[in-house]
Image (cartoon, rainbow, N blue to C red; front, side, top):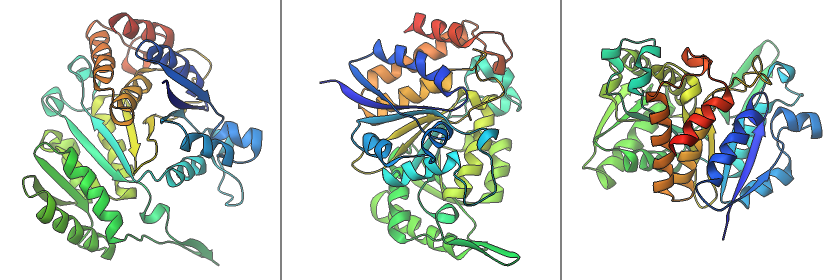
Length: 341
């Protein structure tokens, strides 16, 4: 029986990188694709970034593959107006996606594109595990005259489940990142992570690093990290910092996972409205997000490894899109990978 994939092309370059990804997946298995409007496109069509109908369709799918959302057209500071990002928060909440996984593995063929020296990034292979449904982004917020507030709240069960995700993914060490010298929520975070480690994963090394120190170490010695686990806002910032180790944010995939429902898989990069419609967007992060979907969402490890190997070999053969210093178009990049599949 065909696996159902809910496709959310979104905005900007999203549709341009979705089409070749569908072609890639059709070569790897029997899939049924259901495409839906989401983000800014949904605001234009329905006045909201995520409709109830699309959320229900995503819940009924085996996996959700998202390209990109947002753009200047929908930027606003008016809290009464919809924003594309609200759709992303809504789908994470609606699907119970509490864990965001971002692997960061700079490829030797692209070392020269990294802003860091080759000897600093060589051998880096880390995973950022970010808690997705708690913290400042979901806490009580508001304005009172000339004051504004955002509340950071975490419960022990929320911390326990994200800690387990990190320990299960670790090969040797989990680095728990917090701000326990200042924040009470971070003190609870540290206490719970220590307990989960002692009771369930004593064979994995655990260390605690303050977020400002972690930010410095990511650029001074990224090889020291195996798995980084942290709360929502810290993870948002640190995962983007880690992304740049590869030389292009256009190269990185991500997976958002939860309990029983489908996972959400998406590239780290944005919708790049400045190049939309020109056929020059880099599709590789979308391909690699599809690989994460195959691995974590559909249990198809061999197919996932085949995609990752094809991307690696295409780059080793000299494939470079514009963000990587070359001139390959979206179609040329897709063909290069498909030829190695």
